[in-house]
Structures are given as C-alpha cells and as structure tokens.
Amino acid sequence: MTSALILLGPSQGLPALQADLQSSGIHVLGAVACGNLVREAIRLGPDVLVCHDAPGDAAVFDACALLAATAPRPVVLFTQDPDAQKIERALASGIHAYVVNGYAPARLRPVLQLAQARFEHEQKRQAALDDVTHRFEERKLVDRAKGILMRARQVSEDEAFRVLRTASMHSNQRVGQVSQQVIEAARYAEAVNRAGQLRMLSQRIVKLYALSALGVDSGAHAGLLDESRTRVDANMVALRKAVSQATFGDLLTAVEVPWQRLKAALADPPVRALVADVDVLAERVLVQADQLTSNLETAGLVATLHVLNVCGRQRMLSQRWAKQVLLAELLDGDAAARARALGHEAGSAFDDAMRYLDDIPLSAPDIRESLAAASDAWLALTRAGGQAAALPGRRALGEASETLLALFEQLTGQYERSMQVLMG
Image 1 (cartoon, helix red, strand yellow):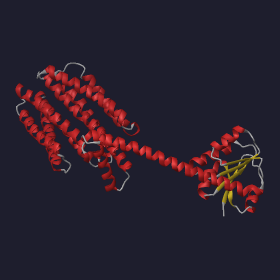
Image 2: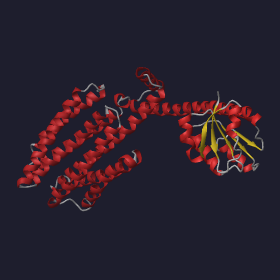
Image 3: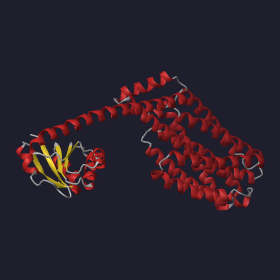
Image 4: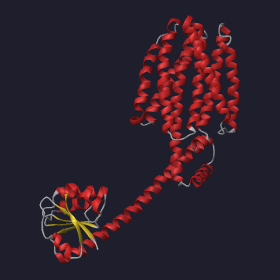
C-alpha cells in the first residue's frame, strides 16, 4: 500500500484530503506543518507527500525545496492558484505534480502515481549525471596524480598509470581513490618540506650572522643571509597558499610573529654584541616552525611523511650545530658553556637521525648515494668545528656546513619525490 504524508499549508484547502486519500487506498501516515516537514519525512519515510494549498504559499515551496535537498520524496500539490511564476517556483522547489484547479478524489491515485513516476525518472537521470560527473572528476584526479609521479620520478605516463593501477589492485581501491591519496601526499610532503626549511633557516641565519660578525668572508655571508631572509618570506607565502588556513593559519601566524622581529633585527650589518639577541629571536622562530612541521606531518596521514620530516630536520641540526660552535667562540662564561652543551645535543640528535635514515627500508639507490655523501660531509664539518678557534677553521666550518646543507636539501627533495612517500 502506498503511504502518504500530508503537508499542512498555511491556508490549508480541502479538509477532506485525509479521508479522500484513505478511501483511495492510500495509507496516511499523518499530517505535518511546513516547519517540521523534513524531520517527519525522515522519521516516517512516506512514499509520497501530498498538499492542498489554495494560494500556493511561499512557505510550502520553501519546505519542499528543503525536503528535496535533504530527503527527496515525490511531492504532489493541489492548488487553486494559476499564477505562472508559482508554477515555475513549484518546479524549482522539487514538486513533481503541481495540479491547478484539478482536485478530485477520483484523480488522487493517478496523480500520485504520476508524481512517483516522475520522481523515479528524475532520480535515475540524476544518478546517471552523478556517475558521469564522478568519472570526469576521477579522471582529472588520475591525470594530476600521473603528472606528479612523472615529474617526481621521471617516468613515462604509461609507467605512472601502471603504478597507480598496481596500487589500486593491492589496496582494493579505485584508481581515483589512490590518485587522490597521491595528490594529498604530494601536497603535505611539500608543506612538510617547506615548514622544515623554516626551522633550518632560523639556524642558518644565526650561523651566517655569527660568521659575518667574526669577520669571516663577510661579503659572501651577507649575500647568503639576504638569500635566507628571502627564502623564509617565500616559504611563508607558499605555505599560506598551500595549506588550510582554518587548520594551520594560527600555526603559520605563530611563526610569522617572531620572524618579523628577527627580520627587523637583521636589517643592520651584523655586529658581535648582538649575536646573542639575534639567536634568542631565531630560537623562537625555530620552536614555532617545528610545531608547524610536526602538525603538518601528522595531518598528512601518511606514515612515510615522518621520514621526510626527519631528513628535513637534519638540515636544521647541521646548521644548529655549526651555529653553537660559533656561539661558543663568540660568547663568554655560562653562555659559552651553554652553547657547547646545545651543540653536543644537536650533534647527538644528528647522529641518531643518520642511523634511523640508514636503517629504514625506504631508500632508492639515489637516496643511498646521497646518504653516504652526507655522512662524509658531516665528518668534514665536525673536523672543521674542532678548529673553529682560528680564522681558517671558521672559514672551513662555514664552507662545510653549507656543503652538508646542500646535500640534505637534495636528500629531502629526493624523499619528497620518492615513490614510497607519494604512494604512502
């Protein structure tokens, strides 16, 4: 038996509607006001909604439109209002049979059947449209994912699609779903890399500032200092565009505030007396940038982003270690002792991370080669650090730290573009 729910319009028409429906073999579930239509339609689940409203009131149209958007049902409205604009609004509101001056008990069943047939036709057409739209959107995702893999690993389009299809089969997901994961992994991998650069740059800036203050190749280091400032600003702009401001905007602002103070302190030429003050500001940037990076890693929901984070952190630790060696030479007493202790801490953390990166089963041949080169460069840096009391040793320290940084920049990029990271 067909079930019906009666919608009570503000100026309800024929009061005999319920009795007429029942006499036509329609099971009436009840009557509901416009304001409660959606709730009751979901609760009762009628086959059809019926209303008789003499003027075709706007409240009825609004209620029907809300129903169509949340819990679609066939809708029949009997009215005495022939206004053409009302007819257009009725169609736009999801009313399937808008009957003007045509109410009669004998017509109820065929009119309701007409509304149900139109509703089924609309649902099938919408389902077909949704399927075409879904396939089109999925195709765009696949093309984007293929492009990411092609650029990252220098493979052909066919090879990139083969990777996606293989991952789809192994994970029992559609190729479009796997493609979406690749796109998200690439987006978060880039964000983690950029946020990690902010950590590194906070320490590199102090290292370069200290070298300039010590008179070590001041012109060259001043140029690198300018480049570092530009990189921080560029990464902040890129992160603002790439990540959700609702989710990460406060963390980006937390980096921006101390960065602006540090940037202002760097406006004048480096002087020995201000190295400690500059370092305090840089430490604030480091703390906030580290928090941002950790949150981006967690939000990415890809376990391999941790590898990218660890590798990117090595850039920061290499610069932090070199910075602490220089601060130990620049500062006196407890401040110098603290710099040496922090340098030892940074060196230990660097060694631990190197062992981790050597042990994980995520390394392609190019990554292995870069790791070996980085290990050699780290030994060269530590040797230079032991000679930092003299000008040649400081110059060697600056050069070795930049060499090691370049290797870890390369290595972090390799991890960011690795199949393991992109495929999760």
